[in-house]
Length: 240
Image (cartoon, rainbow, N blue to C red; front, side):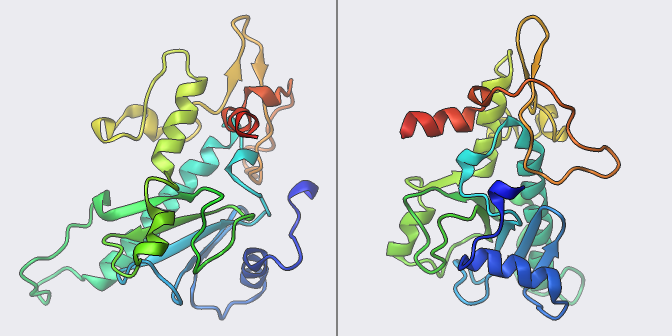
């Protein structure tokens, strides 16, 4: 999309561009049409593993997203969990050769995935205008108190909370997802759940997603575009 074209001088755009052309960069863990994920080796917040998942497009903030981008957010969360699980397994191998008296569990309780919301930023990774998610394995033993502000409840937006709040805003039954009390909520097994909005007369308000279209599914169907129906855009306007 032209409106989210790469910006000259943006460090994150540079990482995305280099990942697309180089096969030798070992800190790149994943790249597809939508994301580039890399391991933060220079300034990780955790000695066990810290991953950054950047959108390939130069999307300036969360408020550029709409409910149609829910599958994109779910994919970020799932990708982060897979990559962190792989790192965790490599650090703590299973099997008879592993003799630690306190082997860690490989569930998701030690994973933290989310966004740092402006005006806060990670002063070691000072990118504020190219949307990217942080994912790390707790504890954050390399964080430090000043840097820790960016990862505190004051600035941190957990991706599960974001997904759940968007779904609540577009669902007539106010269904929740992602919270500890609903860890295995059925809605979480459907990435597209809550991605569409509509009026009582059945008319859908479809906001185009920024995600690259699935070649097997094709682009989003055309329809009435109502930017006001996006909870993130509405929140952005209310804060401006």
